[in-house]
Amino acid sequence: MKKLAILGSTGNVGLQTLEVVDKYPEKLKIIALSANSDIETLEKQIKKYQPLTVGVANEEKAKILQKKVSIPVFSGKNANLEIVRMKEYDTLINSIVSLAGIEATLEGIRLKKNIALANKETLVAAGEIVMREAKKNGVMIMPIDSEHSALFQCLNGEDPKEIHQMIITCSGGALIDKTLEDLKNISVEDALGHKTWSMGQKITIDSATLMNKGFEVLEAMWLYDLPIEKIKVVVHPQSIIHSMIEYSDGSIIAQMSEPSMKLPIQYALSYPERWDAPLKRFDFSKNLTFEKPDLERFPCLSFAFDVAKEMGTLPAAMNSANDFMVGQFLEKKCKYLDIPQIIKKVMDNHQNKKNPTIEDIQTAITKSRQMAEKFLLKI
Ligand code: MG
Image (cartoon, rainbow, N blue to C red):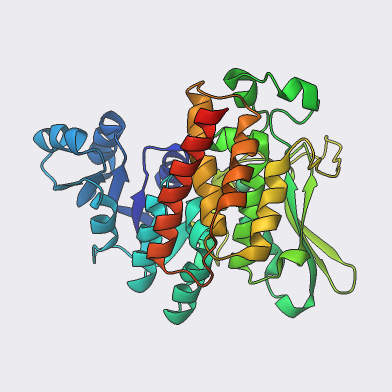
């Protein structure tokens, strides 16, 4: 039986992970859960799964919850870290949506926990440090993302030296058919009208700008230790092929299924086993199409390739500027096209530090956020 700690259990990935747990109560047991502030959902989860303890990042909310439940509630900005440090679990599912996810992953690696990773910031901003620590501690990171799970499966039994290229597929996001002129006046509602996947708001905007795909390119580079030149992105609107690997002999191996986050979540927990399908089986009634991504309309994707060539603290700066700008856009405080424009400005003005420490990365994150704020005021 796997004993799980889920960080971010009230978010989209967290909730879907619990649905997998519901199907396999004899194989998966919940030891600890954490949430940012949604204590109503967390309280229901406590009743149902009876964890030993929970964490709530929002201190006020943590106090309210503690009065209602008999188990300990860790609170504040170290709540997730305290969960990670528990002895009673073996597999850490990190589905926090923020930079706080980095510390949690690193601590889990140092404690030699199995890591199932949905938090993007971990590898985008701190890939160099995280993968070095994972290697040192002999920890394997299982990706919870359809693309990286696909790549992992396409690598099964193959020699990574024979990889010609990794091809990451991309649904194209909600704005794929818009012209550059249309994009000038895109509303939050337009950008949230995503077609094939159901996700949180931040990641839906990142999917619309293709920044999310850029993040996935960086994650794949780190997870599979591949030079950036060997990673390609192809738009595939049906989201049936979740990614592919082309080997030296020209064979392309793809992993396919109906789109659902449950499959990569379940596989991260079942590996090396395969359990029953958590989704509707593919019936071959769809045509699969492919096209090149348009970097002129969606420059955020090209930013990821740019920072991959420089590395250092630059990916963290890009990530942080994006974080800030997407927040502003969701609050209707800036226009859609301000997002790439300000990220680019922050990247151009960032003083890059190579071979960064985690403190360097944190500094880059704070400074880039301030810089983005300053540039936005000038628009
Ligand atoms: Mg994905």
